[in-house]
Length: 105
Length: 248
Image (cartoon, rainbow over all chains, first blue to last red; front, top):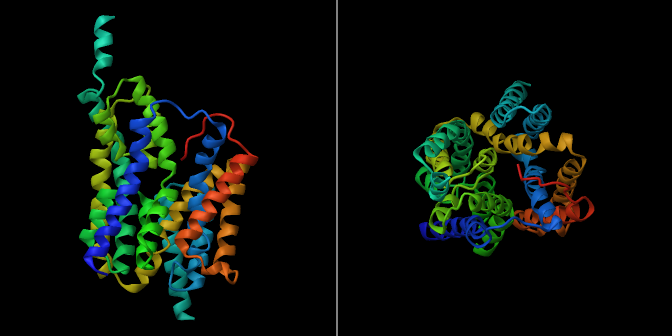
């Protein structure tokens, strides 16, 4: 990849992200009233992060067995409301352990 | 009374606000370091060096956005696709900025301080801002001063060590970001039926766009955009949020 393309990509990412953040702060100095817009914006992070997670998580590790093990561990710990770091690291450990065991079989 | 009015006109806030923001920013900065570390490693795997990763982190400061951006960049996607991905994935910042904007209006912040506050609107800094009775720009700046260096340095060290770590460890770390996403969305989903259905529907819809013939030709970036907008729009229509709910 050329530096030129990378720089254009970074400028686009940074520019769009900053505009999203700055426009409401500068242009709209009141609260959103529409219940529909409020609800739409409320559900966005959940829909977005969920669609980024599955099914990609199934091939996040080198082997499917490792990925599935990490997925299961992450779901269990997340449902128990463990912190971000705990859930993430436990999933990594699960992948590592399962892939080491599988390598011996 | 007069002095109190004057204090309120001091719209940027005091040194105390700044220091409080820095204190509250410490745990955020530590968490950011770890998350950004995995970003730096992922970027290195896609051929993007440590300094570039640090630069992306400094200019974007958005975890989900940066990971999604990486996917689009690595897949050779167009700049329009990249812009749309950022727009949709980071649209939640719009809601947060609206909310922060209203709080800043209460304390009388001007336009210039708002331009700086804007760069620090993230899930976590938004969350601590919500806890303030009176939000001053200096508080947000304090949190940014601590949290953003954690985010940038994490990406840098992840980029460097990503090259050094053995393959078995890299394979294990690849799941870290998804674990974090699950840790963000599942706790609220377990207590709120509507959120749970949104999460499951988004995953199912994305699976359809991944495996069904023809539909799977849609690139990952656009698939995420389509799923997010459709699922959130339908959910907002079928199950409007009753009282003010912020994004997490």
